[in-house]
Length: 68
Image 1: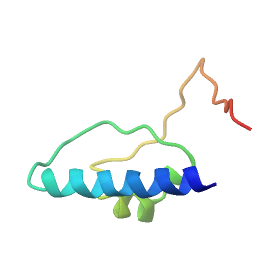
Image 2: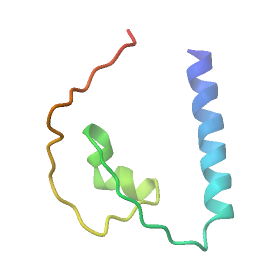
Image 3: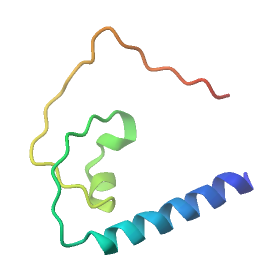
Image 4: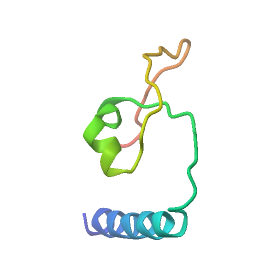
């Protein structure tokens, strides 16, 4: 549990550092998401502004989790 909390703290710190360093550069990337990462409020908190949205099905692939 402690390692997960520490990971999240360091992840957020690195995100803030990256945003401060790159705040003047607008970048366009393709973003494939599922679950909570489709939530507009979550994207806004992560400073992601979709230029367009469209549903997509990734055929011949499966989502699996190998962790308990």
